[in-house]
Length: 235
Image (cartoon, rainbow, N blue to C red; front, side, top):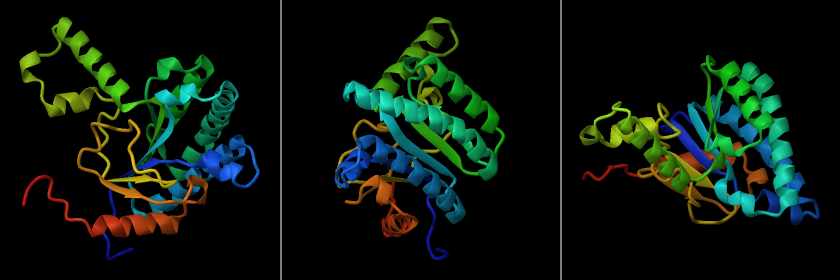
């Protein structure tokens, strides 16, 4: 894709795992497992293209409302994924970070997240951010509380707060905003994902379910991105 500008940061709403599976007579859990495999492939291939950051919506604050059995299966899949990610991150020189309210997760999952983040913190390849127990509105609420705590402790001048200040208190501090947001499965909404960060992102929606997403789909999304005139409010 030498003729194209590669977006530095691509965000994914990986939608349609369950529907992909049930359409094939399989369990929704099977779909989520296939979705995890697709993510592994896309991370490697996107890095080869020159993408530097990928952020994925893995489990939202609203997903707790799903049937208990499905939530338990997702948490068990997450446990397996986090453990295998240490090996994969080492092999692929990938840094992995988790955003969201980690306090709402089980202690063993929190420990696995801490181990993965610590083990991969010095890797210099692709930066993968996994949004777990994440909601854009919840992130803004938590950011506001952190700012107020620092204000009460005289660590911040309330009159000096600006966009840069807010960026530093978000889960994505030090991570550039997404250039491109991709959502699979035909839905055309952002579903409470990165509400602050995607203010100037380009959106790309496609009908494919996430397990069927390929590097060719990503290339088409990048071509779409390159056809956009990104003026950021200017002329």
